[in-house]
Image 1: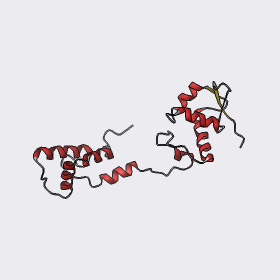
Image 2: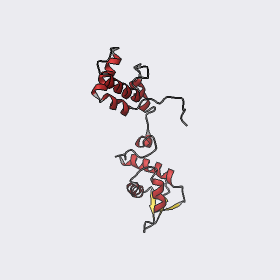
Image 3: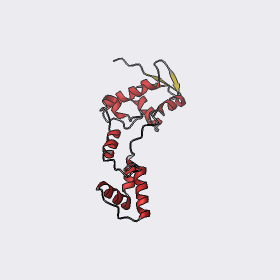
Image 4: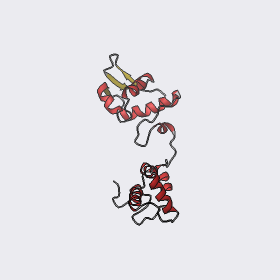
Length: 167
């Protein structure tokens, strides 16, 4: 649960959106340099509103000189991911499939282990629902799981099971 008192760190899209406007950028540059605005009253007010909304200045027109660093730090990966985890995004969904056979097999085994228990049998529909946790393209993932020998299926494709590995 998020702390309601904690102010969220600026969103880079809002920052770029605000600075993409020439007048808002001009107003921001003048604020950073401590200069008076040369924009008209209405345009300056609109620019100030855009900058406040993006978090670049506060209601007292104080520039947050640390904002860019904060945004970058918030979006940076904290710990380099290793092993099959590096192929998943922060939500645990498949970001990309590995090229190397061994790495793809390892990733598929990880997915299967989170999807189906040893000895359990699932219909195609049940398996598809569980695979949606990892990807939108469940047909491709299901095909990889079978082709790599991680999952077995009945010849008619109606029931899937985890293939026992003999390491």
